[in-house]
Length: 448
Image 1 (cartoon, helix red, strand yellow):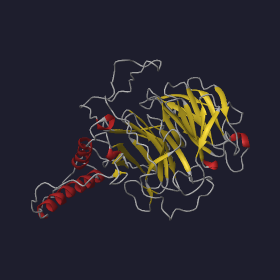
Image 2: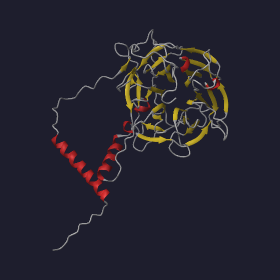
Image 3: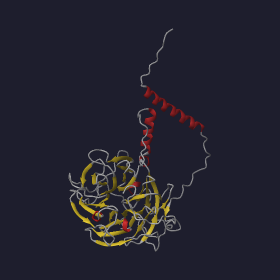
């Protein structure tokens, strides 16, 4: 009797992987053959959009989409190719879906969305026009330890407040590490007690870093530290701990208005304080409470093209919108245990892009909700812009006021309304839920 030996030119692991892919294909074909197709009913009406405020009031904003991970931005073609390569064995790794781990803050430049992720220790980047995803801060030099607050200048350069390293890291729009700001010399104490946030002016000249301090920290640490954005030289500080006008208690974030005024979230005093660009106190609005326009646990702040002010409140599970005088216009969001559009459990970050779209971060639901002005169609603006294959979104800026930026490139969309909500005698949203817990002095939460 002749012994016949069959030899496979593959390792057992590769053979098992191939069998798994073959079985997956067979199962998919079998399931598709067994599925009973539904009866044809003709075209279905799409559900009405979620608008804010709700009818019969005039809509000011429309819920547009939510970002949970890279598949929410990457093109369908890229995902299909990735899955096909895995099934055919051309790529041994499964299609990689990467969800947000613990997002904290968000910044946007021309359709490119930057989200700090404290769990992943990187800034995750979602480029909607290009349909791609990548990370910033995982390579050396430029490795991040705990990215918290982030911001972008007019050229798209990214500024990251690293709470653990207690420095500000600067990258270009594509993630190339440029420089480190506010780093202490060897043997000297850090320039920050608890670095919480960073804001840069559009020209990329000055950086405003929030040193939040703590309940037992020295009074001088509750301040804003101002640096030269290019050299890192410390220029001056704004305020110290206290409750009098112009004094801060647990400051959390800062935004710069079109009129070059500094709006500071003074969370421990439950108010927004306004300073001029040199740090001189001007005015304030807000107080502790559960009524419209009050604050309980304010966190981040953003300002639109008309200088309307948007403030995240973690306890209320929403963001409130005020006019430049500090009068409440409306608010969006509700506290919830189940995720959904404008449902929040631990909202933290907020920003507004060039087209008036609003981006809201929730840490526990691990998402970013996006709302667009009601006057802006889904096809308008940078998020509505779809690039041709091979084309890249440009960070080039048409602004003669920003040194070093080219002109005549990447013209922004024209006739984009700002989406400014109209003034109202009272808020046009639903009431603050009665179940909201009584306001408490904000202390050191999950991140700060």
